[in-house]
Length: 213
Length: 213
Image 1: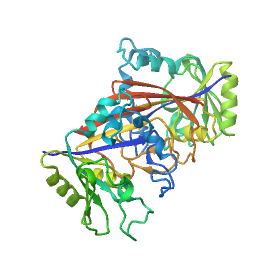
Image 2 (image 1 turned 180 degrees about the horizontal axis):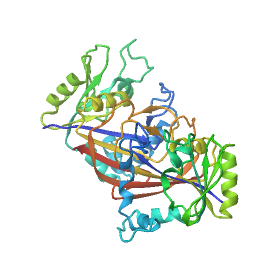
Image 3 (image 1 turned 60 degrees about the vertical axis):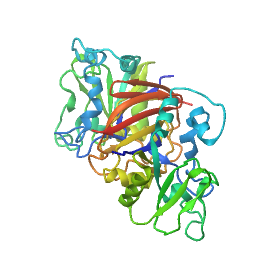
Image 4 (image 1 turned 90 degrees about the horizontal axis):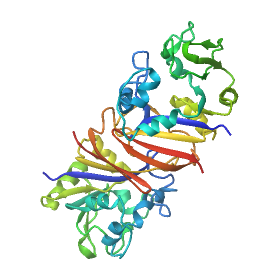
């Protein structure tokens, strides 16, 4: 069956976004540091249409995270920013005219809105009736392939709490943000119910993979 | 100068002890799982007077953590348990008649008590005038060697918040305790002020080392 796969970067002190998230700092203060390990990788640059780049121990992990994905689910903040203009006026999110997904994306929100079709095959569909509905729609759209859970923290936590995540790859970055948004908070004892299957140490990051036990 | 070195095991969701710590569960429910990777290692068994054991990628890390240490600082719970009989009557803690330290140990507490000398060279000195005093006394006793900060979480947090930790080795265990005591909580933005210097992936644990930047 089509799996729900969560891939997310986290600081060693447990934050997946820094404090004070806004339009200027969509990842919060310091949050961009969670992603520095990826930007120079050829495996990351290629889907953005960029040439060249590095190859290291992270390469197969990044490639794997993009393989066999037919649809994406994301939270509202991941689409358009927590304190952004979203809700007041139509806005096309952070992603520009040609978002890097190139497949159907389902955005969890409380604000109904018509679907948004972008260049390059990415469509954003706005789902107002909950995480199960969004997952069902994403699975149908994925047509046998897996569904990527892109974040942010709140959306990821909801799916973990509901025990709907089948695979999880934590990119653990050995820095301290000190404050911000935690992934593993309020999930309840015993959650997530996932078992460690692989560790890969790479420059600036350690990749920890988990699967259903 | 003599360094203060913190070595502590943490779950991926950030807990260094499980919930409901008491005399039956000094590490909290599930907390013992943080240490399973170490028990079969020859490097851990040897100082306990046990023969045999395994050698793997964790071996040099465990050996290094015990090298060049002349004294230890620990919190009251690490000595005698949060809800233990300590305070009501003299008690010799978790450590038995021949504790594995074999050097001076300074216990942070609010209860004055005469020093306790054990077999094998371990002495427990009870310090009631704060973390700086305990560190000063430990440094003097270490006689040029380093001081080990043995935990628990509250003591470690106090030293981190005061920016007194010079080296930190996190044994990151890829499990989820779901609840319990966090190490990295309430330290304030920018803390700890330590820089990642080494990652070692080993069976059941990833060792992340940090030093003063």
